[in-house]
Image (tube, rainbow, N blue to C red; front, side, top):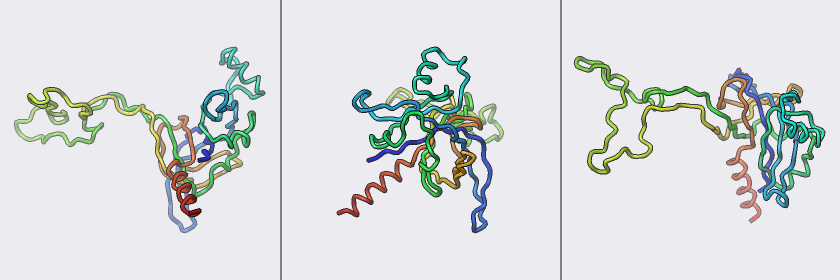
Length: 227
């Protein structure tokens, strides 16, 4: 399967978009301008094929001497965010080092997967973290309205089973939302409008790729059509 490249994006916020039939849909605005290929990873040299992509220019004084040399070697201005995205071997030739990734790797109405770090909520109780109801606030119940309740299992197995829903750290984890629809592309502004919400706060960095499920389904449909 020929894996297509993705892009690093900055989440600008959410807004609304009116469709031709008058329907209003919520969209998330992503800025992808400035995605530059900074290196290739090949099967012969590295054991896998991937594009190394840089995003957002950075002051050279804020980089180490090694990083400054790495960017100057390929004649690319220093970048703040650098990520590797696995691609097929055929894609490397189409996107040489130093080239900006075009926005047309996505298409309006197409499906994408967006990966980012969700908003951190800190240490939370079971009601907010797991949507438990709590107990009734009737006569005789004291300071127990939002407690998690019993966690024991008596003699057998005599321990708390793994995965028990309890209070703890909420959010601040790597999250991927799959099969989101591309509502609109704005090539001149370097913006992608994704229908719905994506992980992370405004100003957060996310990775946008073509939908894995949609790509697999298309490959299966093509293979089935050839039979």
